[in-house]
Length: 261
Image (cartoon, rainbow, N blue to C red; front, side, top):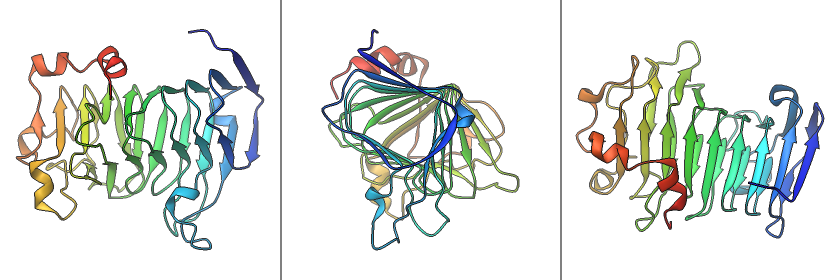
């Protein structure tokens, strides 16, 4: 795809709060090198009653925006929710990027929007990938820093896809050994892990109902073709789904991005 504007960012640590407004479209932001081109801030939810959704380091409201080879970090102490990336725009792409934080690192904010994370590193503590948008994670490392939950999807009932993790690696800090794949922030949460390598830190039951058994009847949690010490398919909660080969073949990147959400 051709881009109207490409912005090249030199190596450095940029202490700022960046908003890409809704009228900005068809722009590509390209860092010189992911681990040394860093946008960082340190807001958290308990600073002056800020709340979760104003803590972002980078917020993207525009459509058709691409980020490459950048680190986006929320460096706040563990005193509350602290978002590094907040997305609202449609058809956003993050390629070879790093997302550093603790609780609520990546917030995929607006239902029906589509996001691609390809070859990225995402770390956090609790619910560090959360929200209602539809996001495809391809060949990413998902790194848990404590015993907690990776995802907290809030996919609406009428949206076909929520989170799909394909060919990703689930890793953890030393000593972390009790991590859930996800819990539903809303009743129809959609999260699928396919062809992923799961470390031994993933709990055998895999999923949590967020203290509400009613969620078990509505969530859309599934797995297919995962491997590793954490891929305990036979020990998963009974209300999660193991996809058949035929079902898994329908979940493709093309279908994901071309389906009306």
